[in-house]
Length: 88
Image 1 (tube, one colour):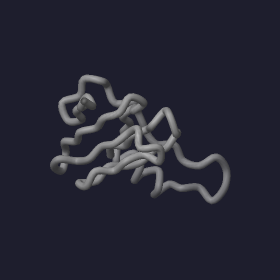
Image 2 (cartoon, helix red, strand yellow):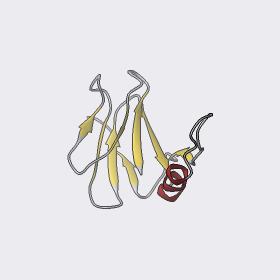
Image 3 (tube, one colour):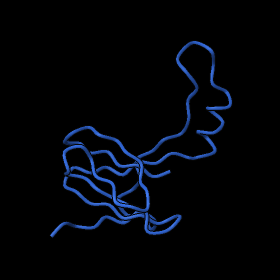
Image 4 (cartoon, helix red, strand yellow):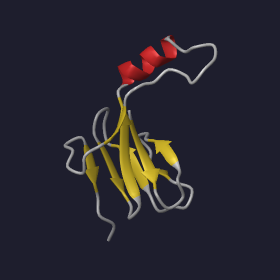
């Protein structure tokens, strides 16, 4: 799953086929198909996590304690499926 973090307002949000925008309107993005997405903004950081890791964490959710970890990562600046679009 692809997400965006806006470093200006600290809003983290997932993408959809319709454009989504952070709370301060500085960061935006959308899926262009089932895999590929575009994003933009001066304060944007692209994030991701492995869906299987998240599903396993949900499956193994403990009753108490710190919770179950899953794999999340900052997506590289050069990523063929997540394209940065400069604002004009």
